[in-house]
Amino acid sequence: MITIDRERPFDGAAIEALLDSAFGPERVTKSSYALRENNHPVPSLSFVARQDERLVGTIRFWPIQVQDMLSGRRLDALLLGPLAIAPDLQGKGTGGQLMARGVAAANAEGHQRILLVGDIGYYSKFGFEPVLPRYITLPGGKDARRLLVRQPATISSLPTVGKLVVPAPVPAIHMPVPLVA
Ligand SMILES: CC(C)(COP(=O)(O)OP(=O)(O)OC[C@H]1O[C@@H](n2cnc3c(N)ncnc32)[C@H](O)[C@@H]1OP(=O)(O)O)[C@@H](O)C(=O)NCCC(=O)NCCS
Image 1: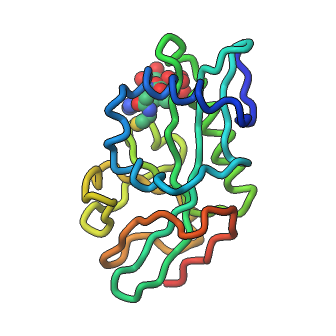
Image 2: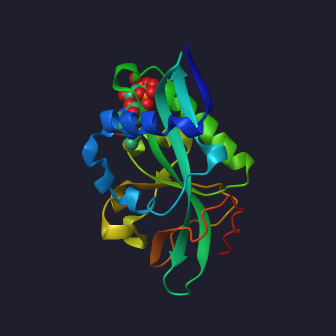
Image 3: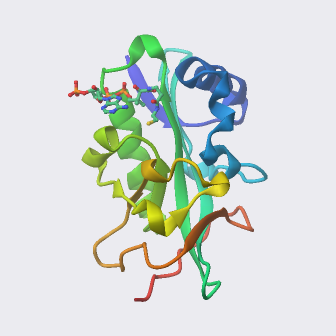
């Protein structure tokens, strides 16, 4: 039986091994990793899937900001990822369970805006939609077409002119600044 649980401090090594098996060692060259350098996942939003004592899934959320390059104004957001399931257990709904648990917990903590770099074919069922690539720049300028966002209709659309996704300067749990049109 697979259970979803909060990540524990001693899970780090097993998570790194799982990420290597799911994504391959070149995973650290992805643009989303630049947003995780000198940053820390939010502990209360880090979940794992376990099959007995074996760690078989992981999801994390990182504090980031989206900066308007014209005004310099920054909007708080979360970066979701990595999401990974052990290759031999993929396709059994565990990724969906981690997504549901993580997104619900993020919303419950007041985080309205969640971004990720991934396949829309998988993430659309969790309410994610593409961000227009010409409006958003990721560190290194890569992966813009795979940048997805989930935000309630009650806050203004994320893309305006010239935005840059950057790590949050203070990696802490914080309430988002409501986006004003
Ligand atoms: C992507 C991943 C997290 C999904 O977790 P999972 O437990 O295997 O997925 P679930 O059982 O919740 O969902 C399975 C469904 O998602 C689909 N799916 C899986 N990966 C997909 C992708 N990249 N694009 C579109 N659909 C995808 C499967 O085809 C399946 O569809 P079905 O329900 O119609 O049969 C997992 O397969 C994984 O770790 N893959 C390798 C790492 C990775 O790609 N991570 C995500 C970055 S985009």
